[in-house]
Amino acid sequence: MAGDIRSYLRMCGYDTVYVNDDSIEDLPGALSTDPPDSEIVSAVEATGRRLVTRDYQLAQQCSNTITLTTTETSARLSTLQEAGVCFKIESSPTYCGVCNGSLERAAVGNAPAYVADSIDRCWSCNRCEQYFWKGSHWEQVKQTLHHID
Image 1 (cartoon, one colour):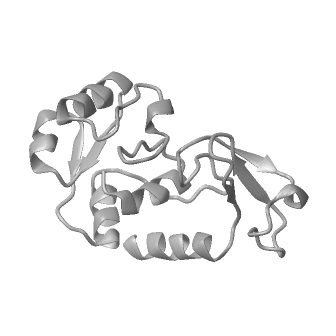
Image 2 (cartoon, rainbow, N blue to C red):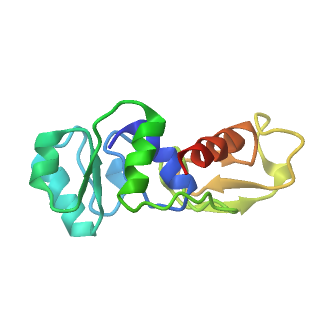
């Protein structure tokens, strides 16, 4: 999958595995680092996932695939939407944009210093402990998704 779209999918509530994620070994149906195509296909089929890739040869090996033909993010998102992916940003995020771990509501007062002072809600990842809140990145994602409709 193209890494630039994984956070969009995760912010819209999709359980999204990215082959180059650091925590890939911890996921169900885990893949090795830099897995061969056959391992990717087996993991996709064993977990009932859909493969999103620019690799045409890999796409031909897997039955449930969306093949991307561009490197431009909004065009990739449009291709996914045309293939039936619904892009509606979650009001409360479910998956970590960094590692795909589960997000849980966190106390704002316990958030690290890099979290904006003006927020009233935040979430933390149970795997990588990254914090998320509705800030400028959230708004940028919403705007990008609005423009592909």
